Length: 195
Image 1: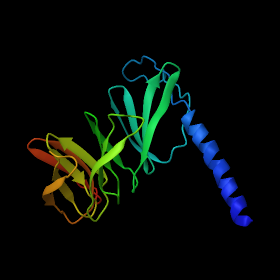
Image 2: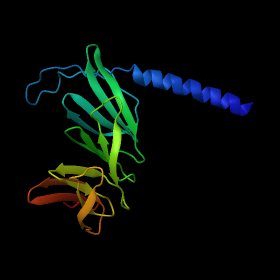
Image 3: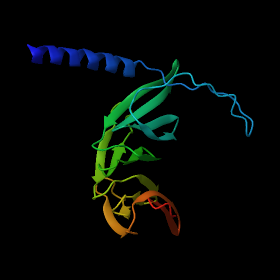
Image 4: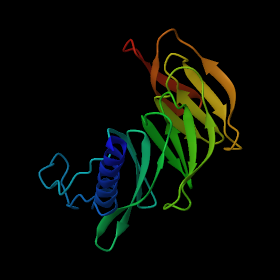
């Protein structure tokens, strides 16, 4: 009896949560602002989707990592709406968007490569996992640069995003937390506070 009651309560909570997420409007009122003037922005609503650590916009579609879920938010006639989502095995720290692919720095889940060409049904097409936590990702051309925590900087050839292949690495002796790349240099930040 306890099991049945517990299952029933869980189902009700799940249905309510699903209804709230599917009908929640994500909206920040658009306003013009002069340089240095931030008084013209009003928070209209919030979403309880998990700890959001990253957000990117591509073709008027917003992608955010909310806990262990990639959330896809689109503009609609009545405001913004949740178009789709995909759970990942880790905790999303950073996102990088190019064309119809989202590169997800997924913590202990490694790098996840998500095809979002159908925003209502995103699909993981490739991944790369190494010890440590992938905290940041930058993509330039056919290469992904990963801030891979204690495993250092990892460089992957992603010419075939379904099978990313490591082609280089640098392990500085401290955790790598963030990465930026502009040819011919790659910049990293370390847990020691160094660049």
